[in-house]
Image (cartoon, rainbow, N blue to C red; front, top):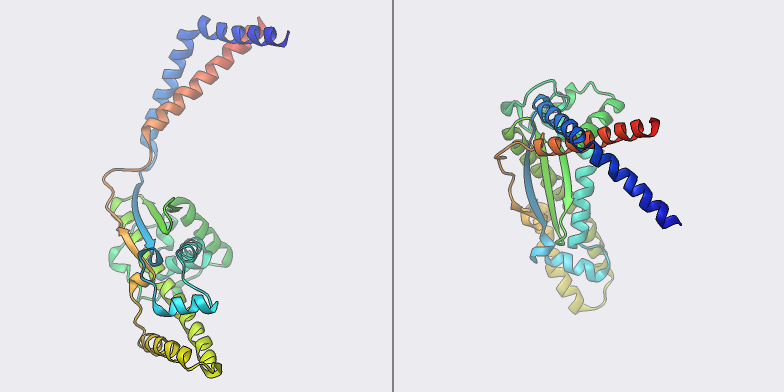
Length: 282
């Protein structure tokens, strides 16, 4: 009985389409044309993309990293670096510091265009910061929602970054700056981790009675401490850029094909509901 009722219902619904097909299609096409026309009134945005990979995937971890793993002092595995990089990029502090460091507050709010001559990290914009905490949170949320997107690739260690802006050149320039800032931030964290590990190794060296172990650790300790003191940390110890930010060849938004499809589907459903309601009333 239920199957018969279902068949009757389906036949009833299909009959509405067959009887009013020309009107439904005409209205659907009309709405798709309106939707297509409206897409010209939206601001265009251009998206630049970049791909980076954690250095552990490239087999470039240092001797101290291996020793620290063995001693249980913390390591620098590929997964850890990927998680750390994504967490930094999504953090409020990183984004807000980045925006104020390069004076991009008004640009983010759409109040000014990008001035390449002012994009210098050695200029202190923070002294001109008149934003309160709520406004900074709003800036951060706006930048994350409208500008940058982060995807972790299926391949271990890969991160795909993309940034959308109103001008193709802007998207490439800002994405380059973000990668530089990420590198700078991760280097500092890397150096702090080194300091903690070296401190732990100093303690082990002072307590270890095994001369062979002492000799091995001492050699690595001396080498890494010299590098730490000199501040020399190679970029590829943090991550390596596989695909650098490129200049977009065409606009990313609006996608006019999607506008056409949306208008047609919405028009089809709306006109069908109209004839369905009309049939019930009759």
